Length: 460
Image (cartoon, rainbow, N blue to C red):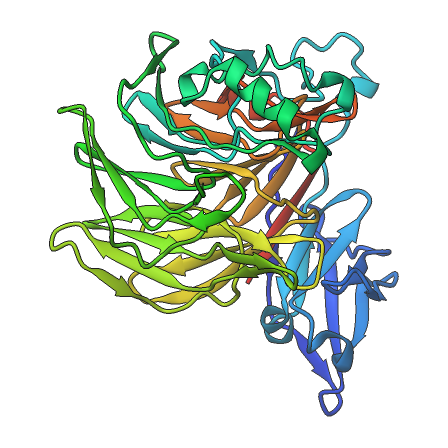
């Protein structure tokens, strides 16, 4: 069976007349024969052309000048995506045929691929975690804080007193205390609102959890980053004493792993939730996030700040193209981010070069990922949310989509050696939103053994 890797080769584009129309030819990458019935659509899914028997489509320039990406789709071929700039500069497009479904012919194929990515369940936490910070340091995963709140719209009334699955005794409040608070606040719609204040450590080799015996700030929706022996906990939000108001947390906690101590730094210009922080040389970089919520809605920031770990100073950098919630990872001096495309229910991948300060669009999802878990292994980025897993090769710019039987949202994911680790998040059970305390592991080899839902390659 042919390996299903999509390569799109682009050559020169012929322009007709006075430049009001564009002609593009599409061929089979192996046979070099013209492809008929290739549908060409704009980034808003509007069809703008289709190839004829000669594999040629004539496109009106007015229909493509304002679109971000042009898609080439055919039922028997992997999708190709080109930017407008590539379209006006090139002519011939070669599409790669999808692999044949061998299981339709071979009934007993021992190497038949799975329909969904297989995973292994590891030792769970004592209590569920959501909206928490996390960082991978060597062979250990550190998580801290998180949202313990229980809302009326989240849990049915007949389950208010059934909180045995939510063991929050390590979070600074006893079960009886929380149950009492819930009983007292049934009339206020919010049954319990609180954030965790504990740090937990997972040992990958021993498959064990440990609780750090120190008091941290109660916060949620924050980030963590490691530098040498110190873990920096920053951003997110905290609650007022009576739990009725939320504040952006301006305090940075620095946990020294060797000394097992924590100290506070009261200077943080990047106060936000659902932002990203990545280590870069002797600095760490903070980007985007939510900064305010009022009657007008949610307000975001496009600010980018750098913290110099040597001199202790903060610096402003070039702003992001859009103010938004984002997730991201660092690869070879570039921050790769995922965020919502403005005014559209889709997400896109962008990169920010920390040396040149340039932003660039790298790819576009056919779906909207609200707050995906994200991890990186060499030049492959993995995304996970609500039963779907994606892999994106930053060099080939190839995006693959898979299914997985994990319906989780707001989880955290890390890659250590040849495995992915997924922690926590929310899930729906019998119509109620619940918080997961589970930890899962996925071998990277599973991606080669699992059916790909679709494959897209981008040229931007």
